[in-house]
Length: 158
Image: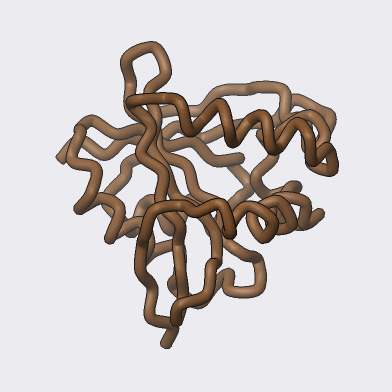
């Protein structure tokens, strides 16, 4: 079993994160991504901008000491939302579930919302396992698929 931990995101993580966020299967499952995942300059600008947000909580997810992705929370129109990106090489091994459990101890704001493409069954399973409940769906344009898709909205109240 992989020993999962959280720590602050460091500059040394960014090259790996950029590569993780370009993986075609990960991009397809995430669906709602940057316009061009291969644009490194846009990635760097986005990360630099994120780091200036006072209400952003962003953590590196590590497994056995190796960087495996990120998990974070941010506010949209007053609502706290959560997001994560985990290395596809460890999907299905409990990393996202453990990272989310650890993160929910760090971020205590409730309600906390999450979104996932409705066909992203793995991510929806992770969220439900953590206590998120489905509160609805929306149809939105997903740049990774160049199409409108159904997005499931979830909420953690407690």
